[in-house]
Length: 393
Ligand code: 9MR
Image 1: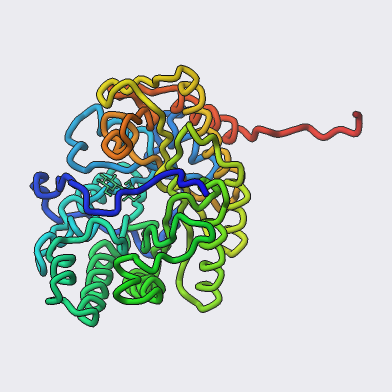
Image 2: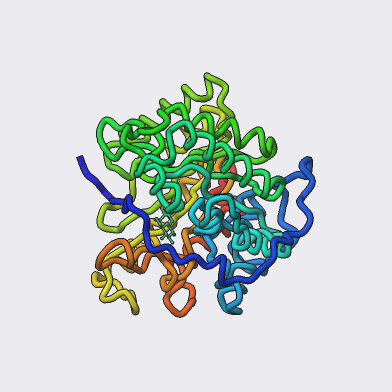
């Protein structure tokens, strides 16, 4: 069995930018609940921008954003011009929104929601239920026994209700639950997961019910990595598919599934991706690529020049294939990159020796991957591949 990637399980030195923003919670008017949320953005950017081309085919192109970086003009302009949906990289995670028990800090999330409203963008909320980036007061309390499992459940309920209520009407897709399945063959819900080990696997369905109760119009997603064949065996996809089918049969309000899409050129492009996305869609779910990036080995974390010249072809190729997998599935409603510039990417900090994972270089200049995505969208927007049918062969 191949472990194609490993996610650090422990809390990471997250840069909590929210406090530095000094932004109030005024987030502007919420779109009306009955508004046609997936209609073309008000502000479509330049005609050849990713967002404008994608709008022609009803697709949203997104990026993870560091709200504090929106103060930097070059960064802000790319977010505004190229993308029609944004995800806060960290600012809606529990660790950031409730650093001290009982005291909320919505400033980073509010800042991004306001920016999105000003630029005709939708927002993906990320993420309500995850083992990682939890507040220290919570994990410490559980570890030393001062927070019982009964209290933990009540705290989670409050967290989900309060956060979804705070952003009610402003979130298009919520990543309700994140990364619950094992990287094994066969795969399944990880019994050792923080939440599962304390509250049982049923807590995942509970979180979806609570989120639906707090904002009945938000699309509720299950989000994970390696669930579209990236593991090489498709075991994780099989397990997630079976679980989703069961949840839907039980009436759990799940609307979509997000494949994160963290790829690495050393493994080649997963051959099952389109079929796996179609299989989820066959359950009546929306699908999305939620955190796309394609890493490769580089000279150093600052310049991020690929050490193998062929990687400069493989990297954009895999981005393009991933977008095409989404384009090939009607129910794929958004394609989001996990940050757009190599200098901001999480990759060099997590995968020693790797980088070059995004679509803009360290100086925020578009890379071949950007132009490949643009060309794919251009072809899709103008109907290619389209053949004139004749009777002559
Ligand atoms: O991009 C996020 C990075 O800034 C954080 O340090 C990291 C902590 O684990 O989380 C990153 O985002 C993750 C996302 O929330 C869930 N899927 C994996 C992403 C990369 O680790």
